Image (cartoon, rainbow, N blue to C red; front, side, top):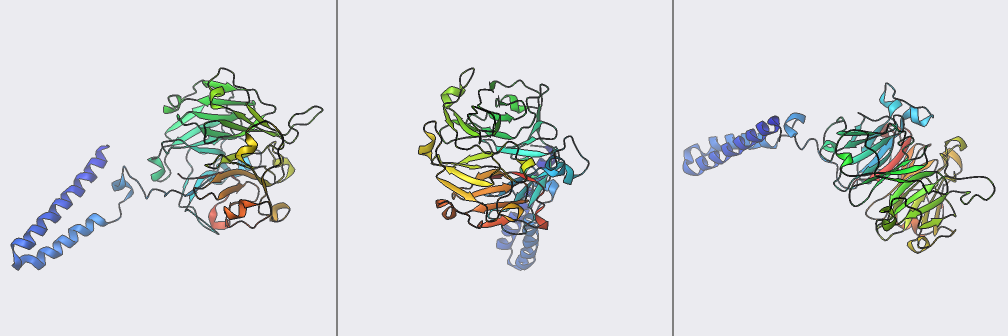
Length: 395
């Protein structure tokens, strides 16, 4: 514990001791009871005053409750196809945190701007630390669980790759052992960084490299059984196996091999990013927006579900559920959907990169195909939505 924290803790202890002394005086000396009572109230009240940033350490500001909606705002540089760091938050982007079940023109409870340069993919590790990939500077940064309760801290760890492995880091996911699997879209690889490699800043060589994809990888995620699933981009040309993109699985056992190869390939459609329900069903956003903003996704502006049973063998199954936009184009509910997350109740959140909004579909709305109006939408001037690229629900 830091020296400043010890001082604040000692002060609180002294106040508590004083309050106990007051209570004893009240019982022992009835004449002084009312005066002592006033002093006790004053001392006790001082203990209940909201802490300042300094006195709050190491706990910081109010922690974000489970269910908070975390959105990476890619910023104007990334949103308009640029690269490199800018000079403003609007240009560089940020990570914004909204209250659970946010709806309407809701301002974020907090935003994290330091070390953010085109933040795209995000993932919570098993201990609750948040990792963010930067598309403008091709690196990864960590905000520890403790830092998430502090106002805009400098990231604790920065991971870079001199070899270009992290160029276009559009997807990232943690396995159960706290190892991070990152999509290097530009180099058409997925890389594994171990828990120990992520413990300090540097440019560690990935432990595992996956290159056996039918087309370039775009997003990734783990199912409840520890298998890694990766979306791949659309391909053209004679004999293409993934004209609309694919979703491929690498089993947990296969990931332990030197050169993992796909166990299952779903070729009916690819997408941008994916999320799994607790029962093993897969939800995927298919990307979209203007044609030049599709990032290799099918560009159909849809949210689709593949049931667990459909994922058991390779093939080209029709999605069990397809959620389409309420209207075509920017006026619709889905316009450039690139991020997807599932909350504990089974509702699905989608980040619309091109709109910009982040919307929620209730579990009931997702029971069948259609074009339902989202149950909630974070939208408006106060939200700070700025090319929203990814969405997570805080565990």
